[in-house]
Amino acid sequence: MFGNHTQKKPQTIGFLLLPHFSMIAFTSCIEPLRAANRMNEGNLYQWKTYSVDGDKVAASNGVSITTDAAFTDTIDADVDVLFVCAGLQARDYRNSSMTAKLQAYARAGVPLGGVCTGSIALANAGLLDKCRCTIHWENIEGFVEVYPGLDVTATLFEIDGDRYTCSGGTAPLDMMIYSIAKDHGKPLAASVAEQMLHSPVRQPHDHQRTSIQYRTGISHPKLLAAIAYMEAYIETPLGLPEFAKRLNISLRQLERLFRSLLGTTPSRYYLALRLQRARQLLTQTTMSILQIAVATGFKSAAHFTQAYKNHFTYPPRTERLNAIN
Picture 1: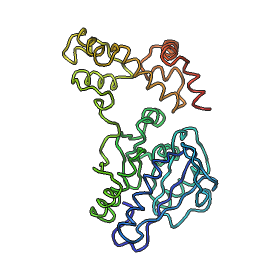
Picture 2: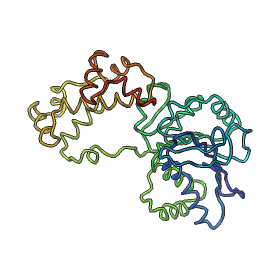
Picture 3: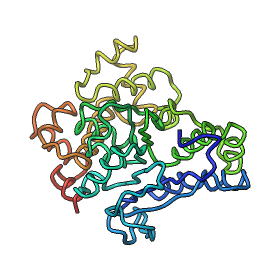
Picture 4: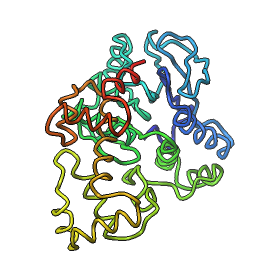
């Protein structure tokens, strides 16, 4: 992990903050380290923040952070681990100097991590090619489309060799507490979790998204199974008779379940799921309209465009322009 029990000097954790980074993900990284120092009555960790140019950098919530240094300077020999913290616009942020410096840190043997969409910066630099990695669930589909060769999971965080990737939100709390336990023992990690009112501590293999039952507020097993099938078959949609067959109910029963518990028809619900996936691909990738249409189960770009406009009131191209601007 970050270090070991016999290390005498504090470990220095570096954080490269990209424009529009996720504030909750960033603070969820630092606060467990601060709490560990307090619980231990001594400095186990210290941290240093960077921006690409050394200036203030604004988070996605508009709050600006004054960083300690520019990332384009000489490699900081004191840094034991370096995390890239990003957010909503990571896909659109490209900086060749930053990429070169990340590669230099990797060659120097410094463990690297990506928090929230910081994984995109590591992938752009070719630093996730041979390891498991994760990213915020909202970005997974687009991430896989852009980097089809990566081993991407939907877990809270992944630690594979000297690469750390974390889905964001409050998941960094779990990753840091997990790392504190590995570095300094479970009792200290438990004290940190208790101090932060974070219990139970989630494990690396835990999934990011809450259950379908929690998200929809329904508990009928057949309906939950139907939605799970729909979410699994976005690119190659199943016909409603096939759903009914797999659920061992009649088509009429399937229609009745959706109408009575969700207030809509199965076909409309399924279409909405596919269009939401399309929206993610439009805003998170550079895939063409036709490619997105195919990836979400539409027979043509024209059919997709019309369905999208009917659902969202504006066409896909407008969605993409809004995301860019």
